[in-house]
Structure formats: structure tokens, C-alpha cells
Image (cartoon, rainbow, N blue to C red):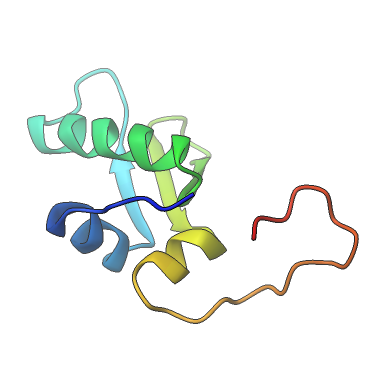
Length: 86
């Protein structure tokens, strides 16, 4: 599956890892970032972890996300792994 990424998506991926505030009153910028994260997450280009405070999300690249912006893969897929993507 080939996905066309816009300059905004590539820029966002290039700035990962980054932390986004997801608390009760996120800024407009953080809300816009979350919208982008949701789409990139569905494409399996990013992953995230909620902070200990429950108010932030740390967004990092998956191997597919790294490849999408021309970075080398960090973790080689395990042979026989059914979740690995070609």
C-alpha cells in the first residue's frame, strides 16, 4: 500500500518524537496535531504512549513512518512475525 504524504505530514513525522498535551483544555495547535496523529496512526506511521500524568501523549515513529520520510529502519522485523509489513 502506497500512501501519498503532504509536506505537513512529512514535517510532522520529521519532528518526532514529540509530546502533545491532551488534557481537558488542549491548545488549538495541540488539537490540530491530534487530528493529524489520528490519521497517521491509522496508516501505522506513528505510535504513542500516554504520559504518567494522563495529560500528554508522546508520539514516536514506527518503522513504516521512518521509511516514509527516508530514515533507516531501527528494528528489523522478526522472521515469521505475522504483524510485519512489507
